[in-house]
Length: 77
Image 1: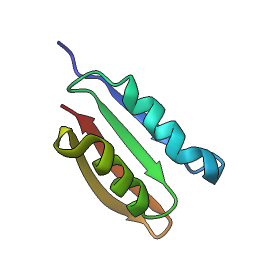
Image 2 (image 1 turned 135 degrees about the vertical axis):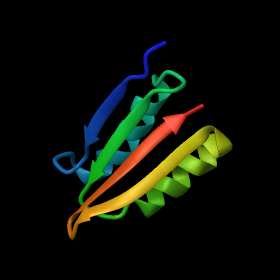
Image 3 (image 1 turned 90 degrees about the vertical axis):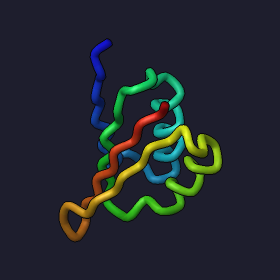
Image 4 (image 1 turned 180 degrees about the horizontal axis):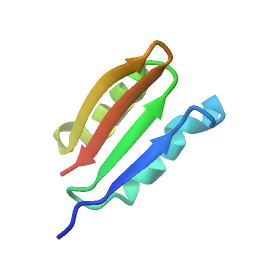
């Protein structure tokens, strides 16, 4: 099976719609596939919500690209 990677850039999405969009995308993610999440601020609260829902099934790594850009890699097992 081939892994698929999707980039989800949240910087242009209205703030109150971002978390819902991430959860929607994760709900259709196949095991082993990745979402590259791009955001304009540290997504700490989102990370807490994701871990609360998915627990150990969620693989999450986060890095700062620039002062106003953070990139995270999300994967469900």
